Image (cartoon, rainbow, N blue to C red; front, side, top):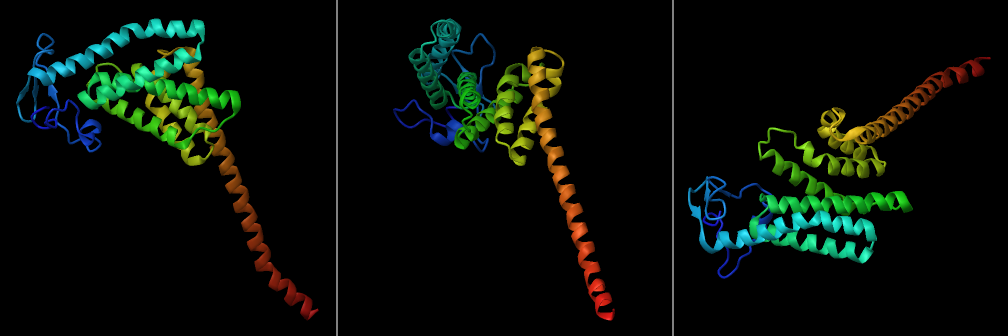
Length: 263
């Protein structure tokens, strides 16, 4: 809302804390209907309408993202055909620029910001998983944390849309991608966290919406986590048994010494 969160004089950009809305304190303006969505929006908190130059700037950014959406599939098809790394890098740079522009002008709850965030998240997860498969390279933990933060924001955004369908239609792929990375880290905490992410989309995937391939991936992630859990439980059990045997030996040892002395 331009009234609740006015921009700095002669600036079209939001302040950083307003852009990211980490504390969920930002108030948003919504169009009354589709017909006037490009001319006026109204805040549910202050009931003030946003019109004029502010909404015009927002419309220009939204149009850029919408145009990019239409042309993106053609660009992806070209990249798959040519496999040109330079084209791929150029595409990633455009995506990053559009995300930063959308976030700084429209805020974190606008569909443009979240669409571009989803695009960048998919690219990052693809790069991480490719590196792990091809070279066995461990993922950068800072990069993993950024992926998790983006995914959390996307789930938060979709939950606020009150969709009549599952948000997994949009987020099953990146959710599984994040879970795979966490499982690959190997430690129990990361694996449990990965299993939590998979549980969000498991019912949806098991219904076959994403195909048999995705079902196998989800089952494999759960299986890897369960296998490591069983292994840890077995190790703990063996350790407990060893400690019990040592305790029995130590309790019996003085008696043996006593019997030897008496003898």
